[in-house]
Length: 425
Image (cartoon, rainbow, N blue to C red; front, side, top):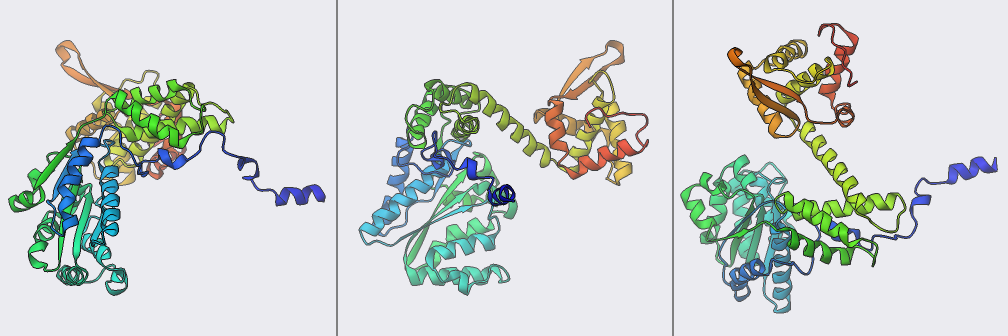
């Protein structure tokens, strides 16, 4: 009885809550962490600071558009600058409001105006419903609060192209024109985008107002990424727990991915976590390779899980064909034949073979399949297709997707697809 009591009182985390031997501050390797120092971004930080400096003297700074690929520090630096100018304003008793809005998460005019309203008033959420008002009424209330509270508002619109793509540029037209309706307050916008060309979609008036200043963040190279990782690792880890080669290895791999520091930080963090799970005291280079496999698997999982339904049906057709033959190579026609049977069985709209051919090309570009055009002499040309993913990895992914599961279960329990025997399941 005593042994049973001990068993019931135990907790699965009892053996896992030992003192950290590797991590000193795990958060320092997170993409949301805002460091006090940004190696190799001093010029960009100074440029933004000079543009925003008029806010400390009560004047509206120019609007700024910041461009650059993912992982080049745009978001972290924008947040850092906002923190810095807010602290400076408080120390000098100046009124500066800042607001950060991710436009992939908040991409409606109502949501944007509501978030800006919170910048001016702590009572905003009590006075303005989260939905239900006309936009012009919310806009009018925002102007009222801005004039009541005064000061300069600096609004960061991250992924601003997602806002334009979802809701058009009307909201930007109203925001960039808002200053003409304000008496005691002014608004400055910092737009952040990975897409240099997104302004080509904008109304010329919006483009002119929004892009008063433009800054480009270039990708980091391998030595620069190594400097960044070295600085972060001093905060994240205890001394001498990470082999120097690990930092170099993570840096070079990330540099191959267009200088994405986020991936380098993730790679370093996961490497250390894998070493930690094996109760090692030193993170060695072997864990970087293991971590990369984990990250690639997660990336493939995300790609497959977010495929549109027609892409999933096409991809399932390729899996079925490959699992039912000795050789993996198949033609577009063979894929299409299986695809039509899937559409008939699951009442999906049947696309033309030409459109399915385009989907096959897209799956190829996403790295899920290999599609190679081969000349057959007098018989013309055809496209040979096979899977580009390890079947064990693929099996674990598709088992968690309802559409794939339904398709493959149907194959197993019926003869609707002929005499195919899918070896993946």
